[in-house]
Every structure is written in C-alpha cells, then in structure tokens.
Image (cartoon, rainbow, N blue to C red; front, side, top):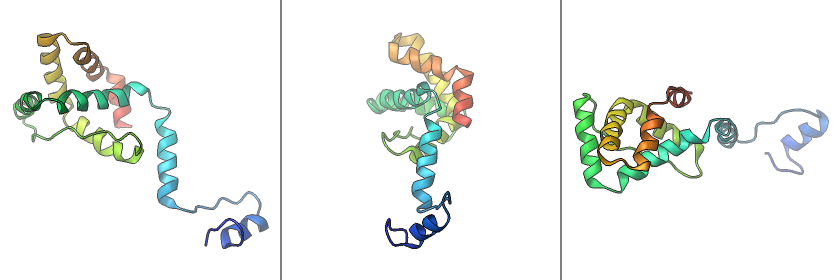
Length: 138
C-alpha cells in the first residue's frame, strides 16, 4: 500500500522522516532516465530524429541505405522511430543507430556529396562527430 494518507509508506514516512520509499520501480527508472537524458546534448536526439525523418519519407532512400548495409556486411534493418515522450524507448533507437553507424556514415557521406542538402549535411556532420558517438554509447 502506497497511498498518500493511511498506507504503510505514509506511516513509515511519518515515523522515519527522510526515509526514501520506492513506490513504483518502473516509474522511478523512467524518471531517472529522463533526468539523465537532460544532460545529453540535444544534438544527439536531433540526429536520431533527422536520420529517421530523412529515410522514412522515401522508399528509394531506404533501398539505397540497404545497399550500404549489405556492402558493410550488416543485416539490413530499418532505422527506428524515436518517440517524443518515452525516454526508455530511445535505447532501441540508439542501439540500432550504433549497430548501423558505419553504413549510415557512408550513406550520408554519399548522399551529402551528391545532393548537397542542409539536412544531409547536418546528419553527416553529426555521424562524424566522435563526441556524439560517445554519448550514444552512454
């Protein structure tokens, strides 16, 4: 029982001021992850969103990326959609990007040199920023 008025947790809080009571482990883990992610530069999340948005809007782009993945001897996988509200779901997105990092880097190098788009330039620069990659490993 973890109610606010007459529960075991509220009674312990009254008897032992300063006690830490863990009410919901999943919610607490989510809050911890959310706070930790606030310390990570916005450019990391922006890169994940930009990669997804650029590739998601075109079947041709997805096919071209698949060719780069096969060239790098990687199993072709889609880039996952980063959720707006669920920090814990970003783990799968980050792991997929790390797994496909070199194929993505080569793909966006080729795409940027070919198309000279601002969006591809930003993604290309992010994929070549070793600090962003370090944050992704965090």
